View 1 (cartoon, rainbow, N blue to C red):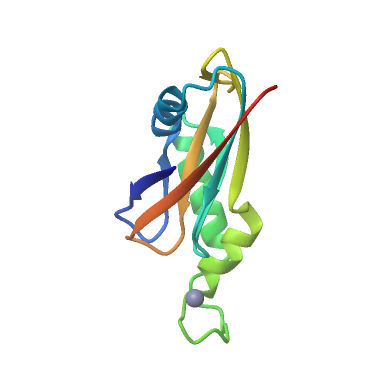
View 2: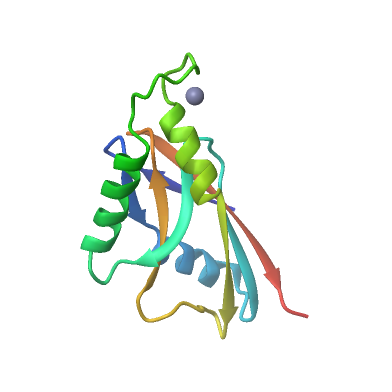
Length: 131
Ligand code: ZN
């Protein structure tokens, strides 16, 4: 199944934990794993802290400083910075499911990482029940 994610900035972390948990609920799976996959070359998936929203903000500020939007890139579309960031972060995460709940640490959230927004994004979920 797919999750829709709307972003409203060029670079932005969107917490999709509750959407993924709802999809787990709807799937009926109690134990197994869910694979969370961004279907985009300029949007990634990562897991990190959102208890303090300064954490995703600090991550974004740092990655934007390390990989500036303009850096004499050759890609004619002009968004090479976004492509590079996605290759660093990766397009997916795999999360255990136990008793119908995502197995996440106290401080962990699942983020869609927008690197060339604003756009409407699709995140594909694959559920693998434990046998
Ligand atoms: Zn491009």
